[in-house]
View (tube, rainbow, N blue to C red):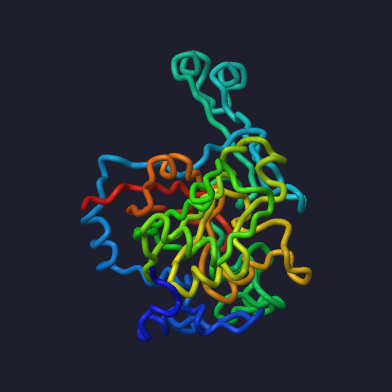
Length: 324
């Protein structure tokens, strides 16, 4: 099992969590202009190594679809997912918005639509500008200098490279022999270490780590999926961060235990991982199929939509089994 005590010293210096100070934004070990944090551990060699073992003939889709009424983060006033048609075949015949005449509109059936949604809707990435401390995000980018009238000028979703890395699933619910962890169950170092032993898998620097709580069994019920979710606590997040994870995700809306057990910080894991450890977060990841297949280790590929400056963006990640 790879823990913070086993990471070699050279790699340790490249892991932001080892230089972090409590409740302070960290400096990036990759330089003062770095905007992607631990994603820098990916390189051509690591991508080629994992792809050489990937079985692309079997791909597991880890995303959920977007639809009207889907669960989401609405408590802070952000809009739910909406979709509406802007062009329909019969509407074009009636309105002729393209100015081509009725004959062409009867021949060419034109449909089009628009969506509106919070950028943290469905399966998505949280970027490093999503949470910080005292107006400062990872690598000491401050709102006073780097926040425009519409979005952050740094650390946005457009800076995220496609992720191609070794993926590890930690099926905490499965280890406990339950379909779903209890409400607000804290996933800490004891659970994580026990799961690694149970699954006979190790963590390595550069991994994408997924935590299965079983909460996807409640999808798409808004309250059952979103309220009082099990998830990582700060100690669990530190365990994974110091082992060298480059992204941490789960099958819940917020990755972390909710409500927060820290009376001073309502998003203790988000602020730690993003601002202190420089690790992007993935949420609402559908881990049921790979959990059922006991796919503890896999090739992970995922790329988010390049929304400039955005604090989050939808993505469609996939897992591919590894050849021996």
